[in-house]
Amino acid sequence: MLRYHQLHQLGRSGWGPALLGVLGVVVALLVVVPAFLTAGYAAIGEPFDEVSIDPLTPVGLVVVCLSLAAAVPVVIVTTRLAQRVSAGWVMSVVGRIRWGWLFTCLGLAALALGAALLLALVLPEDGGASVEGSVNEVTEQTVAFALIVLLLIPLQAAGEEYAFRGYLTQAFGGVVAGRVGTAVAIVVPALLFALAHGVQDPPVFIDRFAFGLVAGALVIVTGGLEAGIAMHVLNNWVFFGLSLAFGDITEALAPVAGTWWLLPGTLVQSLAYLALVSWAARRRHLVTSLDQGVLEPKRPRV
Image (cartoon, rainbow, N blue to C red; front, side):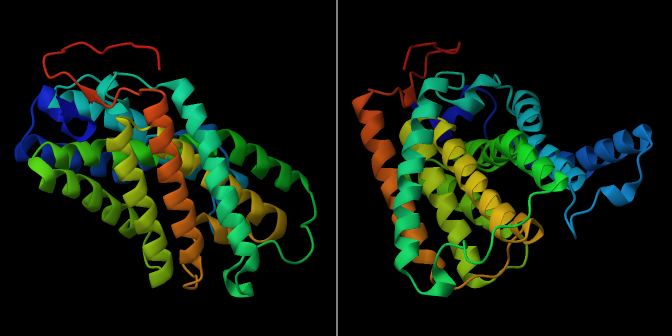
């Protein structure tokens, strides 16, 4: 039986294909995709000062979201070329996104996030929910940001999950065997995910690292990306929504400052979500592994 992180064994696994694939993903996301988006925007003839992230403009947020969402096709193509594995195996052990399960996880993520927000209300001011002060004025730009957050943040979150919990998890899981391989497949992508956000305060780094650990564990426990995508989407919706309503959305794009009071909420949310998803997966008899002899994606109902 193959678990999610071992699915590269269906094709070409090993250090060579893994390193080649990781290099391809990095080059595509850091060089090819930005160049493509820049060329496309230039072709439209719009002024480049509209593509700003400091201060953040609606066009700037669209570019950021599309740049990260591009990880989905990049990972699919890389998996096909480097590992010779069908795109469906990036999604789950049944060869596709299980939409019913994803929406179930979205509801469970809301419950876990609600518990974390309730805890935040009783923490000191510098560790509680950021909803102080008056509500920001609603302008045309506010509406534009809200629509972008609603429609494109799911694509951005999915892109990050495909890259870190998808390709990297399977790449490391395909080259290191046994329990050590399972640990490496969870820990290393989580560490890279936190580091990818740049310079940040230690509590913020640990918060992101913890998110990556939980999302990585859930990929293996549930056999697919759905649980991680659901948690990532909901977190970003809430965070950007609160920043848009009460704070500064520019600072929300890449927050680097935070206190150690972030961590109790993260711990409560992460452990609650992990427990809820694990329970729901058992209740649904969710398929979490693949018979090694299966060469075509199964399509069971879940």
